[in-house]
Length: 499
Image (cartoon, rainbow, N blue to C red; front, side, top):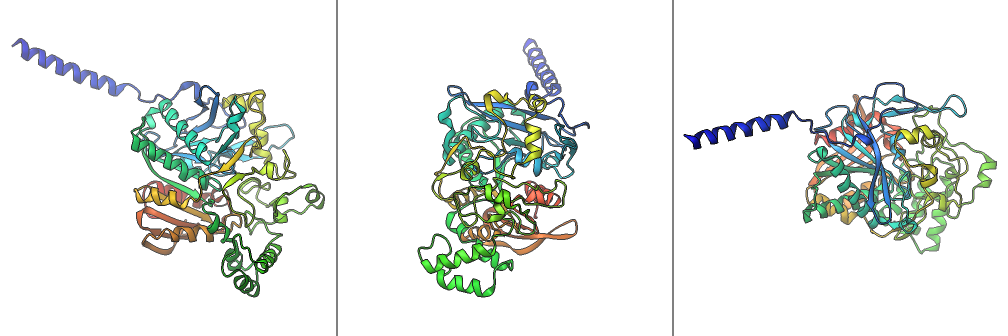
């Protein structure tokens, strides 16, 4: 009798304990990281925002800054996405402010006042939790107290970012079960697959916390020097930017290979191609360029760049697409090679690039009240915020990304490779070619995909969940040019739905 009563009461106690625990809030995000108010914004936030630092090396004081936006839908269930901008050396506030962040920014009406923030109807936080990370140390608000950390590269950046993720999940353990994706654009075509590979190695090794990685997305990403280097000529011909005659001449002289040719006659024809497209906006051939002879003369360029790169990519849209474009990807027909990769300020031999400042982001993120509100360190420690840093010395040491993509997709991780089809900086022709070169079976034949009842681009699906997609009329930073369409393909991909 006594034993029966003991078992009964012990069982009852367990039931009561389980009920009690189920009533205890599971949200354990650090309250000290919660953002209370955002200067420039007067409305009510549709979800919680957090920001701050994660120290990834205590001895060196190496700390990475993040801004975390909870999903506006179901934070506890929706996917969690890490967003990385490229450069190398460019801050992920680029994506936050100008592409798919929670706000649309309106330029300040008077000098010295803050930009005005309005809710972005096409924010990616509509359907996902999203972390914007400044990486590596020395970029954006991220920093190290040991200057040697600013000498870095692909592999160290991937390792450091993996360390960041492990420590971040310790701070936000309630998101460990959420499907996790890594996304980025431009030079993040290197950041994303190398980081995904580090995460997978950690999973294989049983490194805790175990990250629930499901896949990744890369937009207009540099991938492989030969495929990227051969992409421009077919792109500019297909777009009607060079004549059939010139295209045929280039093909004859270069024997169909335009990258790194040693044939002098090929180089002469390629120089003619460069001359023909010299006046175009490299980031979107549809956008006009602002010509200012004085500013053009002041720019000191070490490498061959189209003149449009030294000009403003002017547009009539107020801020939908920036008038000042800077630091997004490698120069025209010069893909990333093994070895030192100069950052844009280093490339242009200037701390401040003439007429290419991102004024709205610069004004907002360097305002003292904003930095205090988002818990960014003081200027005396991390310096002024710049879109792209000249602090780091970056080494491309991971080689071609194709081997990474093959490894990841063959293991079942889903990959979306998307391209704005009017970007001349990293043309879609290169991305289309390398995805085809992987050799996977086509399971979804080339077809249009639609948004809002209109053809928004084209897609081709391969075996092992590898998908290539174009976005019609978009430039280098797809969500900046086509925010509605970007949110739609993003939402469908995260949900595992056909695009």
